Length: 422
Image 1: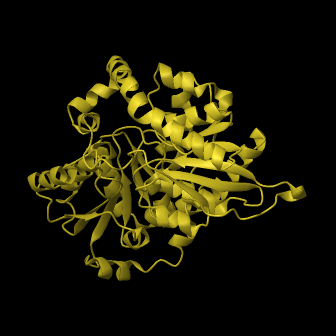
Image 2: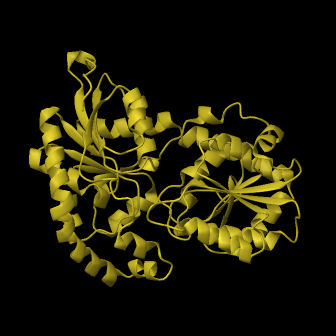
Image 3: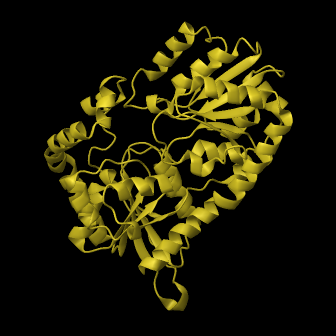
């Protein structure tokens, strides 16, 4: 399905370069949100977006509202309603550890490569190559990590178009992936941590740039008062509210959060913990596991599971301190930046990209990953010092305004296009 072109002309009379944005994710997660932000602020006089998106992606209507040319790819993405064997194994607390062992990752990757090539990569590559030709595409922007973008890399190389890979998650690159990387013109990383991870796996330093994700700060302007937000959420006015935001997957560390809350309930009887985030197909039953853990820790009445929410500014308005406690490297940490935008202090695990975002002692407090006692002490210190909370909240807002706006993000991507001659 396509939408007519907009007919704009670039400065000097040159027609805009057509860029195909490829994101075949079945869900509207962080990569889709960031792509929507980029297209909203893209200079249409210079670049005309064409979007290839999974036919079942729930964000279709949002792309339609932008008036971009859109192609729906029917390649089975999103059709599966249950997680694969690999996804179930990766989410399991015991077998999931095997993926940290290089030898296991190599064996597993080799076994899956042939099957994926036949059942997914090749069919999707053919579909994308057809789109590239029929839409008259000049360049291809792959909107996720290399292993998620294999069909787009193949399609771009097959049709002779330059491609850019926008790395948004950690990857374990196999031999085939490193070969595909040689067919990519350039990389954009959403954090230095991801850039360093790719470089450690053989991607040359000069082949990529770091462009931080951005958020719409306007969402966090004119937030309702703390009391109004608490009335709307049914939270007592005098409660201490600590909020953990993020998808319900084991590596996000919600178990650490619950154990931390259990350490604090003896000090503050009016403590309320909020767990905000939806379940993922590859982590089935994780919410139930967390609820069972809350019962075992005797904090089931203290902690509220709110599920996926679209009213994050309201929740942050009711919050005193935000925590983000991943136990595995975080590629960026959008929830951290949202907390900054809402002027809320943060206690976060010093892992992955988080130390790039949170300046320890300025915007928030950093603790070692998995350190429940350290998190509890950091929260206790913030709860007992209103001036410190206010100072950190203001510093975080200033940082968000300087480094993490959606306008800055879009300018950074377009600057890369300019350097590449797109």
